[in-house]
Every structure is written in C-alpha cells, then in structure tokens.
Amino acid sequence: AIAYSDADSLELSAIGTSGQALISGGAGAPAWYAPTLGSILFAGTGGILAQDNTNFFWDDTNKRLGLGDITPDATLDIEFSSTSSTAGADYGLLVNISDTGAVSSGADDVQGQSINVTRTGATGGTINIYGSSSNVTADNAGAGTSTAYGFYGSATGADSSIGVYGLATSSISAITDITAISGYAVDISPTANTSYGFRSYVQDFGGVAGGTDTTYGSH
Image (cartoon, rainbow, N blue to C red; front, top):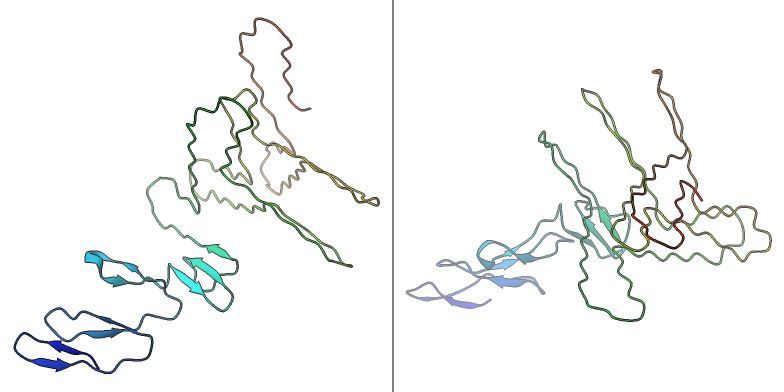
C-alpha cells in the first residue's frame, strides 16, 4: 500500500499487483494501472497514460506488432478499413522521403523503400521468394470507373527516370527460368473490352541538341 493525502488526512491506497504502476486519482485515491495484455502505452490527453489495444498491439509471444490488428501475422502487420463515403485517399502505409543534400561527388542513393529477402537451406519442395507481393481487388458496383493497380510506378525529374525496373539473376547451374518482369492478364468480363498483358506509353518531348537520344517503348 502507498500512503497519500486526501487533503485533510493521510490514507493508504489499495495493494497493487507486482509490476503495476500507480497513477494519480486527482483529489481521490490513487489507483494501480493494469493495462490490457499486449497494449502499448502512450501519453493521452493531458499526459495521462493511455492505451488503444485494438489499434496498437504488441504480441510478445511471437514478437509481432499489430496496427489495427490484435492477432498480427507478421513482424509488422497493418490492417486498415475505411467506410467513408467521401472521396479521398486512404493509405495503409505512406512514406515521404526528402533529400536536399548538396552532394558534389560520389554515389548518393535515396530509397523510399528497400527490401532484402534471403531464403536458404531448403532441400526439396517448391520454394517461392517474394521481394514484394501485391494483391489488389477493385469493385465498381455503381457509376463511374475503377482501376486496380497491382503495382504503380512513376518516376520524373532525373537523368534516368525508371517507373519500374526489373533485374533477375541466378548462379544456379540447373536454373530453368529467369524473369525480370512477368505479367498475367485474365479477363472474365462478359462485356466487350480490351485486355493487356503489358501496356506501354512513351512520350519524348526533349529538345536534344546533340548526342544520341534513344526512346524505347520496350527494350
């Protein structure tokens, strides 16, 4: 128990459980704070200890962090659901990187996302390794149009601007297939339309004054 003053006398608090923190009761008795299992504590309004177990959860058994998920399936598991009827942009993950360093020599790399995946040790079976995997579903049940991008790349303003770059290498002697970029298009629509396995738009408006200028739709 902890002794405290209620303005006119000394009182003893209740006996807490080992490891719990004692928090102020204002003008009343202090209380032992027992957050929900897996909660990550943060400073709430007025600096009080707060938790949001449903949206900010730590799975200590499996060492996983869940944002919007209390049963995370990955080291970082993000789940987001929007029911807004107002048009806008919803992001599961948004990364903005700015580099204004006045580099004058050498190689300077700025990466919004860098993924390194290594898989070794298998002695059989079918092994699939993904640097990045994307599954996108779009439904247009009303008026207007919808577009689903499995991956969308846009690059501008550089000496070399590459929307999507694929490089595949292998040192395995019995390798049967090396694919830098692969595309599959499946059309089950009963309405006449156009399907593309690969589609490319290229425009070159550069006022080149000399040298070699080459434009590729696909190379």
